[in-house]
Image (cartoon, rainbow over all chains, first blue to last red; front, side, top):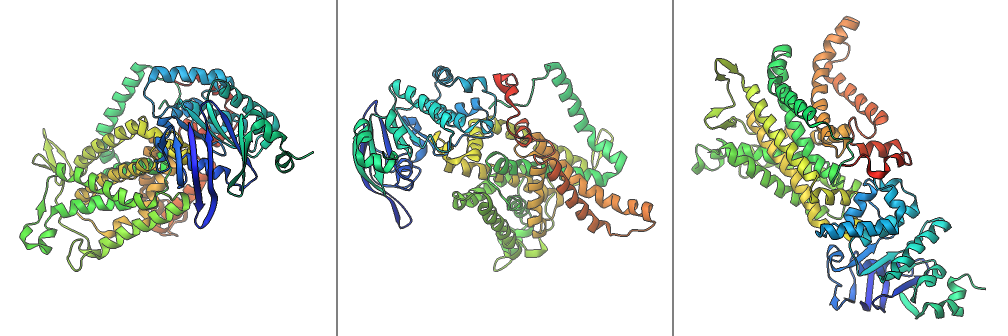
Length: 234
Length: 379
């Protein structure tokens, strides 16, 4: 599905991502964990073409490193941006409709909308309400729902737990789990390493712009170094 | 996009309302002319021009959320284009063009829309990455640059006649009927300002129609998405660069049309008509009326054209009645009261005088709208 080779991202003269390689296979949930400033979000933004990048990003065979961002959703690559990025002054229903902006298959859109509402019943109850009036957790779910409306093949999730109350974090992760269980391929960027690894099949650990560890989620959870650095040790 | 504008009305009521409005609009110049004098019909003509401008700026500021403080530049472009293409002026610089160019209005207005739209893209292209304050500064500069060009393009080739402006512009004429003098229709003399009223009304209705259609279109939804969150808009597959440029171009083209009409109406243009104050005035109409809400913007345009005029005429007599003499010259008092009115509106109606339902709810505060759930207000 996704094959990244020698990806480099820099802001001005400062390089945030220093030549990293990783892969995401079909149906996998892969997480990218690491501390604040490790380059996780820059990596994801580069994949979503929101930042200029160098190297190779092979998405289903095509090198997309120079593609414009707006082309990706049509090819099945959807980003749920950091900080949620819902359209605050549009209603929930309108937000979800924007997710299907590039599609014209009306009946399939209707079906997908029904599926998203099944997954996120809270949103259905409040379809006419402005997205800006939702709680943070509900906004995060709306952002995920909106991305799903584009019928993605690969979902990029940027820090879905950021700024949420613990109970909402659990709920958001329940949604991620069930989306993954339906066979969606997901690349998850997360600071909360324990949580991310608990839902992932594999994980990569990033440290100051480089990938320092790559292993199955279970092995990473057991890795003494990872426990020490990211899981609060014990 | 569906609106949250409340229940659909009974079609018969809607039809009756539309007819009533049509009759009122058709008779307005006669009523105003008889009741308040012909000068006020002229004020109403200007109100219509400002409505067109405000609706054009509303596309950029209200729909796409791009703060533009130099909008009057596009009005200037349209006005000067008309002035050059429909006056003897160019014959002065290019004797081969004697007796100047005298193009018909139906050729100039579309060209004006096109040229102004191109200027919109020229402004939009370098400012694509800017938002908010920074965009405001650049657009403000752009507006001033255009005005200063108009002021100085009388040398080495006299294009704009500098600060003196261009005079002797042909009045607008359609099919041999000149709008510049009284027209006799079945024994009723229609003064020039009445004729312009009907022309401007037609143009305004067209602009309103285009605005409404744009708002409901895919493009309109893309503008709103960009206004709300640019990254999310990109992630939804919106080509933000093109859509933003389109907002600048569309808004500018409205301004260009209004400018052309203005030049024909006044038969005179000079850089003085296109100062920063004018840009600010149009922006006030948009913000005060209700950003992004077409009826509100129209209301803002009418109000902010009529209010200063009313203050101009009313301030003197009121003072004489109250104090026996004029204490503050009406001209100074006018801007003072106007400023006061703006402050009061922004304090007590921050979403504008007639905001859309969405903005009203937003300003009323979060968390008070679950009762709107279940799609009850929606079509």
